[in-house]
Length: 292
Image 1 (cartoon, rainbow, N blue to C red):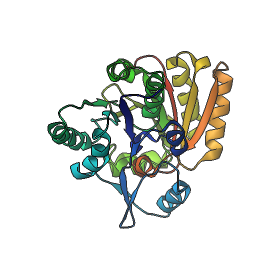
Image 2 (cartoon, rainbow, N blue to C red; image 1 turned 90 degrees about the vertical axis):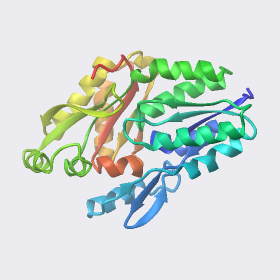
Image 3 (cartoon, one colour; image 1 turned 45 degrees about the vertical axis):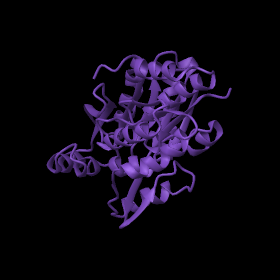
Image 4 (tube, rainbow, N blue to C red; image 1 turned 180 degrees about the horizontal axis):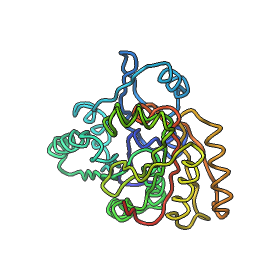
């Protein structure tokens, strides 16, 4: 059904390029820098993710940065010349990038006052954001209005989940999420944090367990506790170049929650991967409202 507005998102959703292509979802590409060279995240199109994590294991320290307002203008203006725009953005609590989106919107609405331009702050990133994007886009495909899709996103953004653990604490320390001392002792003791997408729109630590096996079991149990209607869902497992662990997690989830309709495994993109590092595993789904 032809819509009067365009549904758009950004690559920090980790929305796989093939899904975006199939559903004709325009995606703003977010930047990252590796070994002094800037790239744009293409959500798997070029297949650079495995090499990216290999280079991190070898000592590379990638960085991410904000997109300037001018770049957002380049993305948005061609659309607003023709149609209204609904932009589904990653969490405002994890970056100030959204301020540049708002600035671009303000400039463009002055230039095109007849247009409507709505920005939805998902308070999510990566897999939980993919869940919101795909569910909201299904409504868009059904012909729902921009106001209806926006309302669904705002009403359900606290129901998108990620429960995850990381392979090496040093990447969390580098990002300032834990101290370097905690990372050192945690690594020596094989301590694995369990982290979730919190109701404040950030990734919040929930508990610490010893060893990878206990970490996977904790993810499975938190998923079983929080998921709703698994028979109607495709759970997304995101992995930082640890496909065997991802397969193991999928097997554990199917044993614990046999009603799950399907599980899709996907490697994490470089923008998100720059902050969590190789070895990360996340289980993403829709469920009860976040409590943390």
